[in-house]
Length: 118
Image: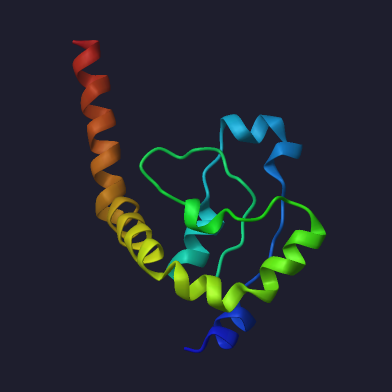
């Protein structure tokens, strides 16, 4: 699929997490994962660190409109430049957050709770 078609199918949502301090402590990037898996280009403001998931390739925006317009001008080139980082992150997300991956996480959690109660 061409870059333009990917952009045409992507939903653009903008939110500066720094404006929502309570979000910085407890967040999970479901939408970013969805965009990543469907091949959409992601332009994100700095995100709180998420253990094991490297989203730095998508975090070049400072949250201000003028810089967003500049990022959109270079979006296609930026998408091509970060292809390897995207592929690594996408593979990790598919592996870790698939039905099997999540069942392993929950299984380990249940096992820890069970052991701690004995």
